[in-house]
Image 1 (cartoon, rainbow, N blue to C red):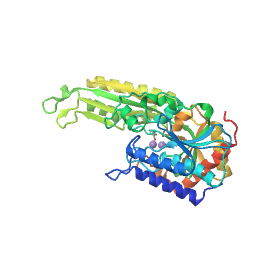
Image 2 (tube, rainbow, N blue to C red):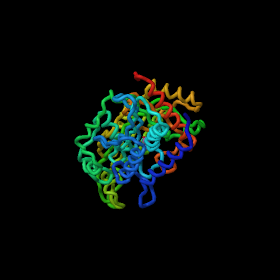
Image 3 (cartoon, rainbow, N blue to C red):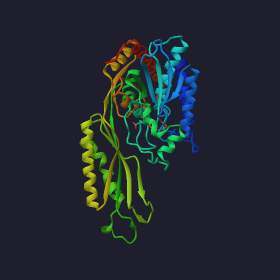
Image 4 (cartoon, rainbow, N blue to C red):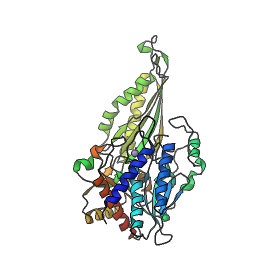
Length: 418
Ligand code: GLV
Ligand code: MN
Ligand code: MN
């Protein structure tokens, strides 16, 4: 079964319609998790699922679970999950492709009168991106029963309380653990996603099979110095929090290159200065620090070395600091049997592919620890992602969809994944 124009056209049309749900007054597009725009996108997606004959429910973590029953009552489900929330002014494909393509698999089979043995579930996981509260994969964490470091009183980037934000999105913060899914009810999980890097595009390949997903550590660092008059405080009398933070940030790229390997990355993506006035020496500075790699031990070593760097810089500057880990996930290989199955489908359908690691994280990072899980990547043109230039070619999307569909059909014939 290979893709028809109808599949690609419907996938692309839905990507566009969901993108428009995130339209902001300033012309940018963002579906921040739990925002009105996110709710609008999810509602639209639910409508499509219902029209296609899937039953739709939301679990206790706000994950949308759309289900098409299989021939065998009570057999474990084949899950196709991803996310619909975006980063600020993000693209059309990140996450959305996996949700829309999962639905397309179900709809294609229904429309051609076919039914799998296993139930098929398309899951929209809540808050995958995590920029709102600084830690993502919220829905998938609850789904696998992993408690995250979250408090009801945590504030989001707008100053709103977590419990209130969740309440407005129909989620009871105190009951999220009820979303835990028991492993016997899951046959396997497959996520189709754009690569978000330029490897496939450079190799001229439409799709990739993910070998493993990078681990991620996120820290919130607060540097405390002394606010003082910017005119009358001599340079040798200052305890400038921003200068200390800036020194650490400026040397980060070289430190990561020196201490890491080809996959290691380190990023400071957010910074806040207090009191943030032209004529006041910064008394406090908070910034985020994120490190990612394919090797858990290397990540630990790097985190320790960076903390020592910060310690030394702060001591020399006469300021203090607080290092708080907000998120930590080890790198995760994808399921061997499923990867093999995807390879066989690619070869049988003459779809050119390679096997490559993912530098971005995905809900599959968490799913893989609990259920047989694998990912298929579609080439991202020029490796652009988390920006509005994110783009994948229709023909590559079509091949990615074909590979997902064929893998679902093949997985359906497998009794049990070890
Ligand atoms: C999610 O897309 C991430 O990798 O930050
Ligand atoms: Mn994503
Ligand atoms: Mn993303």
